[in-house]
Image 1 (tube, rainbow, N blue to C red):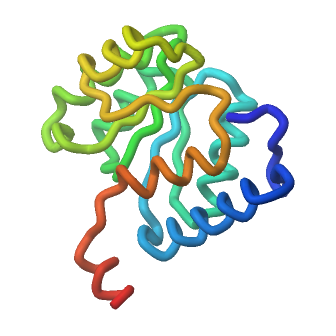
Image 2 (tube, rainbow, N blue to C red):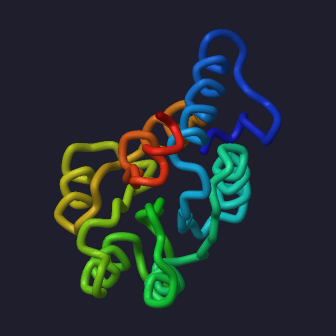
Length: 161
């Protein structure tokens, strides 16, 4: 997450307007969607969780891949944001464990990583992730990714017609 963006702050110009518009659209299309944010960095977890809550999403956080895999055994999430490089259990191995759980084959898992090379993206895809967001992640990119990957349910469609 962008270190220069704290809750309540946004960059000047069209980027802030776009981020707010995407956030509002995310709230309208996916009210109450449940997201698991996994990152070993406290600052990244706090900023990320605040951004997700601003879009009216339900957010749980985990500090490493092991905790995330344990949480996935007991809680159904609509999407997981997974840091790739973490102690205890990295994001790639955690994704493989989560994918092996019943009902988790299609749940979107989006990687978060500072590594943006093609082989890093491919490693994420090979592990079962849907996409890679390169850190620092801006609110605009985060919201756009969530709009793309969060599944739309029937109740959401009926409420927006």
